[in-house]
Length: 113
Length: 111
Image 1 (cartoon, rainbow over the protein chains, first blue to last red):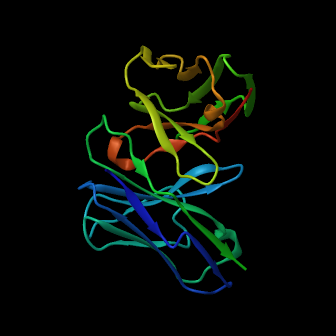
Image 2 (image 1 turned 120 degrees about the vertical axis):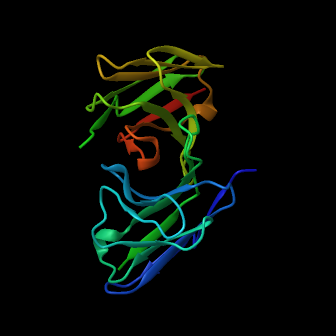
């Protein structure tokens, strides 16, 4: 069954700390995405990737880096976390054909104190 | 930049009733439209897609798209308590370049 797995599910860090959020898909999908979800803003696209080694900038990229190491794995890096990055983060993958809806993971809740 | 607006913000529907959700988008080049549903504590799950003008029916759910008026809607017939969730309209101009979401409509179905 198609799935997107995120880890950790919950993370607490302090201001200035380093955080890495992980996402793995075993769907053979080319495209992977990182979104953040905040009340009053919906879901917003941070970064996305067309394949291993590729990175594209989304709509709200400031303060975030991302890296796609393999077709399966996509990481979101917060190198100097700030309280404004407290949010619910979702990873998604899609197969590259227009008919397939992007598939979302279960989310990582991040709190920056 | 694409703007996607949803209305109403929240909706209370009796069990067995009809829920109607609306979405407007700003970019006339938009090609792909999905409705997602998110239950509390879970990730968004795709409910249905619509890519051509007109209606598309899948079970109790009917989507309607009118690209000329920049409008897409979702109607839920015979609403069930399990339909209580946050519903998002998601729009894409280029499929691979990610989705732009509205803020969502919270639907509550009471028995």
